[in-house]
Length: 309
Image (cartoon, rainbow, N blue to C red; front, side, top):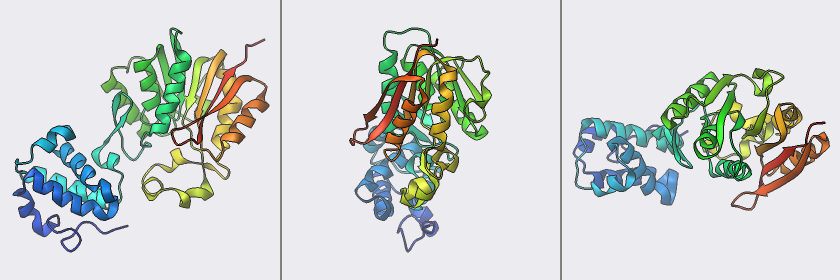
């Protein structure tokens, strides 16, 4: 891990240059940030510096860029310096900022939750497409994390109630905060526990959805360092094959799905075919299918619960 910022690494940003930082204009501070992050972020360094400084100034990046002649005060300089140092050490930009964009939301995130990604937005797209024309639906979001999936369904679709489950109490605090901000707190019930263990046998939902852990424990070295070193292992690793959590969901979901209800999973392309095979082997699903992400990789597994006898 790189050392914290120092004068020899990042001129104008180290502790010895703090007073100089307080005299910088926004334009000069952005250049310092670009140079500081160049080795880490390459061509994106300038954009990242603007994003970090905008957060300090409490402005959208577009407006912050227009404040080029404004000078940083002591607090702004210190906070910006600290944010640059964290990013230069490899901490993901969203954790440094404490926020991540997801569909119509700007979610609070910290290291207790995964950073929501475009692939998960596609998962929500598919659930919303399936729900079109229906009314008063319920959803179960397993491994809810920041609440991104459940909150989006409540905010955008015909869902009147959702239950979000997570094994991490810290993650549930983040989800609760995000639900409050989105104004759906009265319709999102959060429960701590593992998968279906927090449900009663009689509970049924129109949709069971999850972005579960699906990385094999032996594949950690293949992950980008920003994922492997910073994001929560509980939300990443599923076991030796990467199928362990998916298997548990696929097998148990029919007992908690309404007839014709949807099971929607985000999966790794490495286990997509095995997930589809597993769904087919249960004898409880119909319409099993895999959908591809924007890069053409099999990423979303869908199936409907067959009508109950």
